[in-house]
Image (tube, rainbow, N blue to C red; front, side):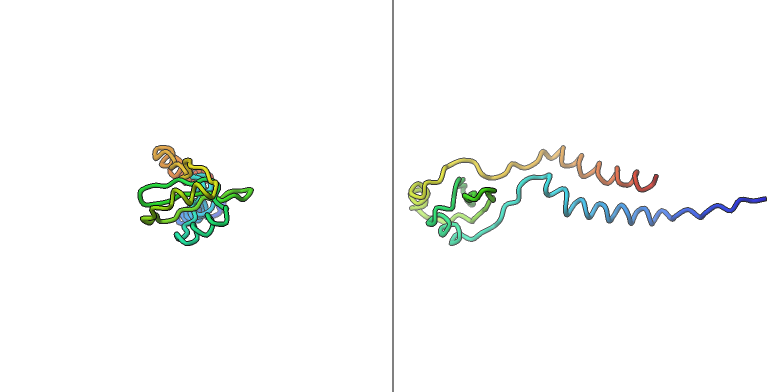
Length: 128
């Protein structure tokens, strides 16, 4: 008597599962692991927040101004820097600190290993 075996699911089914898992990881999990997001604001918003003393820490670079607000969970913001000769005086008068704000980028090797290992683990988990 011959045993009737259930047909195995095609390999394309497993690839579809891995694709969905990779998309979910890349959109939900990995950005949180990579670091804090920077919210882009215009220079006028930056000046308004500065006038209202809502800027806690500021980092002025050649082409960008990175700053955090004074809320309990401070957000990181970025504004395009303009040629404003009075900017340092405004920052000083608002009482904000001058420090490094820009989030550091993740090590490229670690980022590569993380993006390589997550799909591999999900592929092996779905295949078994």
